[in-house]
Length: 323
Image 1: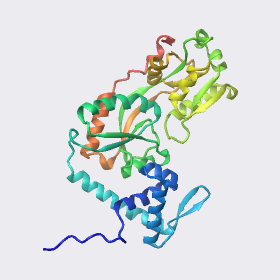
Image 2: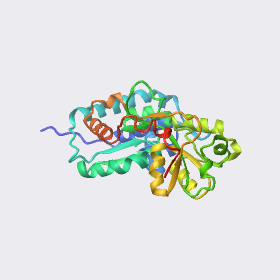
Image 3: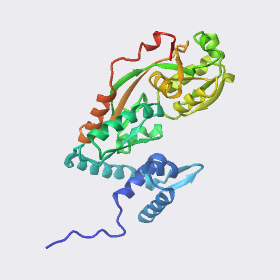
Image 4: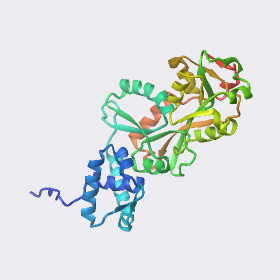
């Protein structure tokens, strides 16, 4: 009887091809290791194996980046094609039962989304799909479409206007903004006045490099508030809330998160007397996985848990302060 031949040591594995694909996207050992959840020594060992196999350095260091050689660029499309074909086989022939699945789903979302969405999502998974794991991924937004395409990210949740046409989108809710301060802020009653508001010290959440629509709100605040009054810039909405709790600083946050932090941190929400654009929060996925059963299931669960009508669009038009 014929037997399946053993894999020779000089053959490449799919995991090694995935490493090459991610390195071509990220151009950085550090970023690629984070994406793949590998240590840098393990990634370097795989890169050495790839260099030996192809007889080419594949990447050379130029400043802080790993630039691909002509050989690596020549391999980019064939390697991606192989990985996509394998994923297509999985989608077509592997069933998905959330009650028994041991699958892991990766989400790209800012900390505002993670803090609001992950607790109720994990609670529901414990009931309906106890074997399923989720992880929040800190992606390089310039490659987010590639991450969605190659399956390193299953869903991106937020407002990402720069995503390509191959990315599908489903609206979850419309978000507006509120300002949080500590409840005993000495000038709380004056914060509804524009001049008084911009005269306060502000902690600004920066979305530079994330590709997120929050960047437009960041720019609007910068245009209104003197730069000398912006005492701190942080990448995290939760951190901005904590700074507001322990100082007189004002932090402008997504209103949904601001209300949640008020309960946890004993803050007060004030309607900012600024003209700030709102944003549509949506879940995004690649067309390649549109009909894949697992991706369909997790999308449906996210939509069921978080989609709502324009619940917060007019909230800031009400009372000036919320406890």
